Length: 602
Image 1 (cartoon, helix red, strand yellow):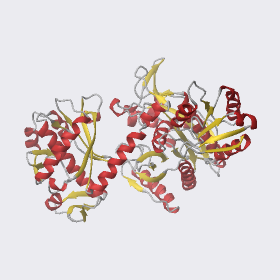
Image 2 (cartoon, helix red, strand yellow; image 1 turned 90 degrees about the horizontal axis):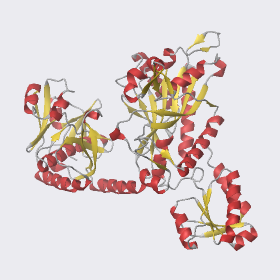
Image 3 (cartoon, helix red, strand yellow; image 1 turned 90 degrees about the vertical axis):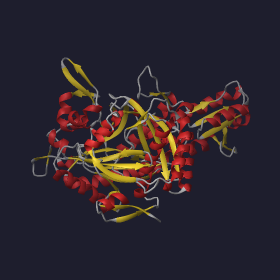
């Protein structure tokens, strides 16, 4: 395989840059490794920009980075571009690839770049974020752009690619700025990899939780109510309630105590916590009686005050407080995406106060909880340790010690993990739980964060074994992340066919005739006593049509009842996948359902 770059100290360099800067390191080849794909996709982004420029000569370009889902380019053009135009842009990209244009890197001065793009407000916006006086450009044919790289040697090496969607994006990610156009794409060295990815995208469209949420009547959004504020319909509320109850019991068994904090706190609290300084742009504020208040974006401050309400002994530690905490965050309008990105959501949040010596055991205990939950919903998962971000509180010693403590806990259990440099919370490093769904997509889900900053800021103390006051360690922990996001992920993971234990409707009864409805109602009532939900399809339609309607609801169980079932107090259970039918007594049916529920304990 032909070399395309060099990897040194975690940094990727293309061949031109490595040669210019005399850098030696590990050779990167065209092998679909993360490093090789970054070079390929960055180059494909530039080739897409060149195609756009040839089709729309007035186009101006902002940035075109590589991201988890491939790459994108933000640009501005007078024409309105939609998904229908992607085929045309792809065709032009293939022409450029066939030209096998040499991709050339050259250096120039900041002054020359400022002059060169004097009439390009987007490029001037890019330059505003760069302080270097010597800048690099990449050129291929008639197209060139300000860029650090890395890039392939020629456009001829870019063959397997696809543009996936058009979106709007605020310039520089600031919703105070104008909305410009963004096009996403993907690229691989291997055509088969691309085809597999395209099939995954097609399957993802079928599983889209926004589509299924409408079909299954789980939730809705209403512009009159406001963007990013989901309305939970009866089906969705039942599903969510079952998930909440399942988790509630699992928390209590593991020694967590339920608490609840207010959704609005005095702004002074957020000054002390550091949220106003480090997270204020994501918060909502109001004024009451001349005093500034902030709606909580996180639950930690309320839990700290609850902990401080009592004099706590070392014998009481670790102290585990949990809450289904409703929080509000100011997400940008263009970032809203069904239940995945909303402005109001509920975290399955917990804060564990413990001694330094208990940190390792607490982390291991939480990871057992995570593992149990993920197995219940058939998710594979991996972990990343996220380190100190640019905006952070606490000194370097705290960050180094705490990060090492997290890694030591994982290493002691032989648990594999990756590193997310700079991905920590502003108050401490964390473990992020990333789950993989049924079609291979990865999702950020739960998190475990070790924090000694907030206990210090709020003077949180307990009485140690010598009778002295001592500061505990505070561990922030969410397993689902939020109910909204997790339900969205789960909906797509199981394509709307929810596990029995949380299905909004667990059984649909289909009475053959009106004389059988009363027996169906009796069964329905008995199910409710066992905390199971059902519906009766007794509408004025033929039996076959009602059965087909029930099958489309993706419910776990469909039960047909007729004369024999009423007379013998039995049920006819229909498997909607095989369309086979089995008969059993009412008692056997209820025993079976309760055994299924019991087997879903976390």
